[in-house]
Amino acid sequence: MAKTKLLKEGDAVPDLTLAGAGGRQVRLRDLVGQKVLVVYFYPKDDSPGCTVQACSLRDQYEDFVAAGAEVVGISGDSVSSHEGFAAKHRLPFVLLSDARGEAREAFGVPPSLLGLIPGRVTFVVDRAGVIRHTFESQLRVGEHVKRALELVRTLAREGTAPAASRPAAAE
Image: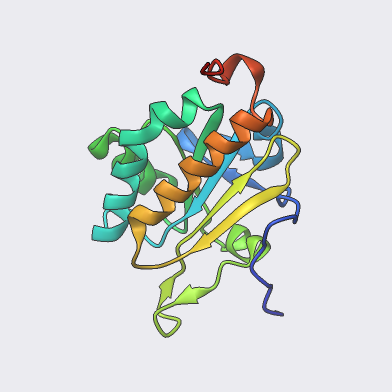
């Protein structure tokens, strides 16, 4: 299987369907349109860095929603693992199972740390389904959240987020 390049700004979000809570099938392209999409790939439920990242997203989730975004986490863990992880840490956003690695391959998310650990990459996708930001770092987990929220807010100011979600202009 050929190695896929990491998707970058200007690329279209892949059309994938993955299993979510309760085994419900979620098509990523169906989530595009009404909101900006923050798609983050992480290595493993309940690992230290992944828990910090997920809880940071949880703590800022209302800020993402207020700016017109939805957050989706993807890892190779099972649906039941995701359900336990989400319940344990009160995660309000969608977690999808990529057990076969098809989403990682489609997005070009590389393994890290000598190929032993699945990579950690965050993508911000605008309402047209175009990737506007890619950030890759296994260790700087807080930076994923900070950069994504900054861009989501910028997109809201530019009018790329739904009008009902945009904050009123400050005078």
